[in-house]
Image (cartoon, rainbow, N blue to C red; front, side, top):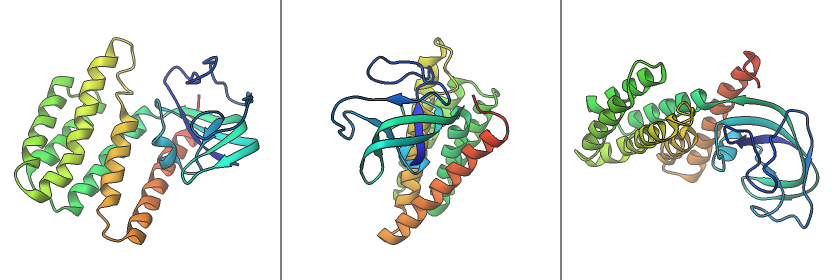
Length: 228
């Protein structure tokens, strides 16, 4: 099975001997397989894998041997990384795109919400400070309280910006500010946007579309020579 898996910025396994993961180096596990407990995990969709991500290192992996399957993940006896890339910036951009769609869906016109997105873009390019991002989040939060529709849609961005600002400050000393919890922000924004669909079938289609968008963005990194 070919799938997606995310690693922390140090590229180490989360459990066991916490070894550094290398491309094309097989990893195996011992003992009885158990989803979320024992096994080497991956998801067929990048967006599902993002839900379990401990960091921004996106990997295309191959699972082999004995396997157990769940709705959004699989654990296997063996896993091998076929390609990996630091997707921190891409995940921030994905979060912005999802949030824009969420705001459009809810027909939010409050300038504070849209200004917050522009601040986020400038922050990504090093043209806005953490303090400016926090201020933009505060403004978006206030806008979210102005009416019910704005509360729902802008609220997804408020969480996104809050994650980014808090994590950017906390991780900066460790040299990991670019990561800044982008995966969590992207996940929340994508889920909120997809959840706007009224029917399950429409929601599933929206979720599939979000996944396709994310995977295209990640593949562009690999094709563009940004693989690690």
